[in-house]
Amino acid sequence: MMTIATTSKLYNQVQSLLQAADGFQSVRQLALENLETTGFPAPKAEEYKFTNLTKKLENALTNTAFAKSFSLDQSSVDAHIFADFDGDVLVFTNGFWNQELSSISQEYQVSSVKEDALVGSIAKPGKDAFADLNTVAFQEVIKIRVAKGKVIEKPVLLLHLNQPSDGQILMPRLLVEVDEVAQVTLLEYTVDLEDGVYFSNALTEVRVGAASHVNFFRLQNQSSNAIVMDTLETDIHRDSVFTSVKISLAADMIRNNLTLNLLDSGCEGNMYGLYLLNGKVHVDNHTNVDHTKPHAVSNELYKGILTDSSRGVFNGKIFVRQDAQKTNAFQQNNNILLSENAIINTKPQLEIWADDVKCSHGCTTGQLDEEALFYLQARGLDKTQAKGMLLYAFAGEVLEFISDEPFKAYITNLVVERLGTQF
Image (cartoon, rainbow, N blue to C red):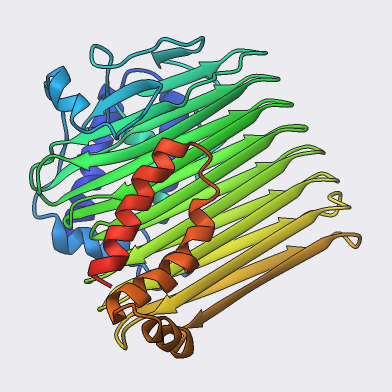
């Protein structure tokens, strides 16, 4: 167990939280026992080798206090909803669901649950210290349930509004259960209303029932003082499709853990990501795909553009178990570095125990094509425009996987603005 001041203080606080926690005692206790055994990741921990989140928390959080919800009026919420959005909005303030400001007009259920067997069954305790921390310390679990046969036509926006003061810690916890032959698209992003140094440690579990279709599109564009740990784990059942698109633009440090458990035949899991990093922003994407049964497909594409002294990390693992014959699994990570001080650490990995599969993985890291840049300048574009056009051509492939057009347009505008100016 680490004994450094902040994490030690944090550990003591979660112990007291466990005693006062309402519900989920058994899974919380198991998570705490794991946390006691492993402690927070040390600098040499393999899974956090290039992202020393423990040290970052030690240096950045002079105080530690668990954040509370806060009041907000409807106009303040509306001001942060992107143009042309057509769907329901679930509002979260400092990680707490604000029912009064949320709208639920379609046929699905949202509730705060005190006990649910799915909680901790998908993201099982013992896999990651920060996921365990969330399990011990979350104050509420918000469950979104789409019943069998329901097709939610319009997207559901998960709008997180944070008002963090220095040292505050947020522990959002979300459970999404989509029954058989159902469909839903979730959009998610966070707006920081204040600029305090804070730590958000979110955990989301998603169960995708047989023959269902779930899209989860997320944007990270937070304040330069935000330290973000985001864990998403999914159980995907027979003949179902889950697609994740994660766009990371700004924060201080971000660590994303994404796991797809393909539990049956006919599953399809898709993971796409884009990170545009400048300044000293640090973004780490850790992904896992676990093929356990035959005739399943996974597709993964992550792209990064980095400049200044920013740092990106990509660590993608694909496991193909012995029973997972006829698996198709594809993984690719491509990066462009625009400055000498920008760093990317990339590690695509395949572990295959089956012998009748079609799998590939790879990564590239390079610089902007000078000949293409010269070609565009020769046709009348100035250097900034030419550079922005080439970079957008590179990044746009990931944006195309966002099937909700207004959300894609919102993110595209942010990307174009970034590429046309600061890069």
